[in-house]
Length: 374
Image (tube, rainbow, N blue to C red; front, side, top):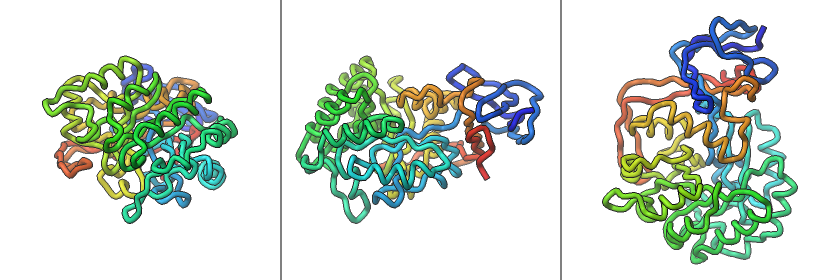
């Protein structure tokens, strides 16, 4: 007798090429079986709904109470059916211990952080106050970053750096060079934020290594990946060939419909769909991961592809192959999603509205092999 059985849903797991209607069972915190007429102590009817691997939001800011941009992970997990939040450098070496003790360790949902190369992390990101943590290089201490990353190696998935006029002031490419130096020392990937130049997109991409992540990858002009005529820039194509991971990181100012249409028309899909949800973008236009996924669904991607970019690929990007799959024996996590048809207006980061015919809504979440969603 299984602990939990979800019955009659459309089970989609891109990691194993699975798209079928049936039952999925969980026992002892693991995926136990996929088939027909499975039985369990707790049975949930999910007929007409999507069952997929637990969603992984690769770019979030969930150091609630410890940073000005932090939001609470648990309510977002319930409303967005997200099983794993990857925090994109909210905390740096100077305050990571508080993030771990007060937020990560007691959290009912998994939080895996990138450690910010800047000592205080992203400490002044809000509507009234905006000070880039890389604008003063005195805040970047690579020995401290290395020390804290090593002491928390069980959690930290990479080093985060924000470069651009907003985040780095006049320091240009230097914070990225420093982040890559410490990441190489640690054997970890870098996630690089890029806002307005300087530096230019070309400089950043030239430095990134295989497995490093460029977030905000479909940002609007300036530093957009597509030219005005819709062609993908040569340095972007070359970076993909080298194995750079292109992550959406929607946020409040980093996703444009015009850019996205051009990139998709050219056959250039992102590697990962993520929300960059924080205290500002949670009020729109990002809102949450399911909203960002819905935008891509309404721009023409099929549902299995959207799920692959929101579960399977993020697991690969953070080096956690045990996540993002419903393979028998895998960690017992699943997101249950409703696909609602209608007329929905979606907004990008510069105010353009795209009207779509579908919207993804949370219908349930399985954590540790148990039904967790209320």
